[in-house]
Length: 160
Image (cartoon, rainbow, N blue to C red; front, top):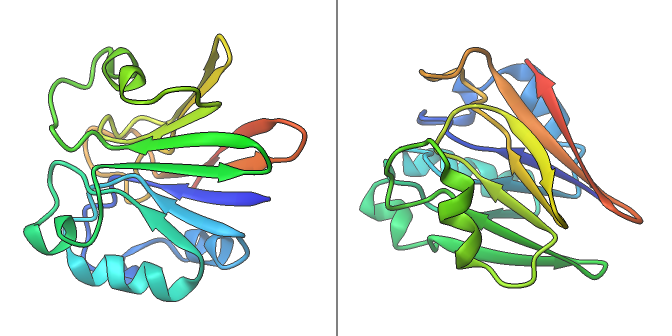
């Protein structure tokens, strides 16, 4: 299974996302957005692309918040994945330590907020942040991620 992961897009529609990203997402088994869409039209557009899951972020409007939750749990082939932006915002430094207690018994944690791509395994948990597909500050580049779920969960960061 391949899951396309995006976050911190801070835009209003798919038209504002890089074409390479849209081409990649169309071939995924699932798309996960880890918050900060900022415009509901983008959420609606992503749902039309296929199997979509997402959480809201600290910059998202009430229209997005009433349709999504702040925390989401996924399970595929026995692997449990937590998703959180975090919606409460806060400093991006040490964010993994703040997010981890929100989830029990997970194999991976998808998150956003920092705008910095990261995939790091700590103990038995893969921490996965796709960065910002639009390169919104403080991102240094445009990125998105792919989670590959086979006999294990493996993360991949793609530069756009």
